[in-house]
Amino acid sequence: MAVSAHSPEPWHQDSARPEMVFDAVGRLVVDCDHHGLAPRQRAEANAARTAAAPDLLAMARALVEPFADVSSEFLAECADECPGDLHLIGGRGLTAHFARAILAARTAIAKAEGR
Image (cartoon, rainbow, N blue to C red; front, side, top):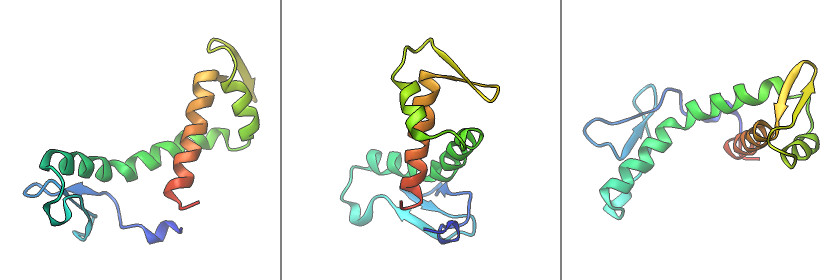
């Protein structure tokens, strides 16, 4: 899915109807309470999560970019080791916890891009 296929950012919840998310030019991205079937609190929480999606995607991309040259297999090996172990990769430090975060971010990016 091409990035141009997404609605322009930033996305925001409507102040009058917080279950709805709109893009930067005011077009509806999603109505999280379609036909009033969800409890209002859940619909508003889902809208808040949806409105944050572009920001979270940008953050995930920023997290993985410095490690683009590191294979997922190596990251998985690092993630399985002791949390205190530190691997140096081209002057960058990588702990098991951070390796898991990079793997999770790569998965989220692929999901957001429809891969």
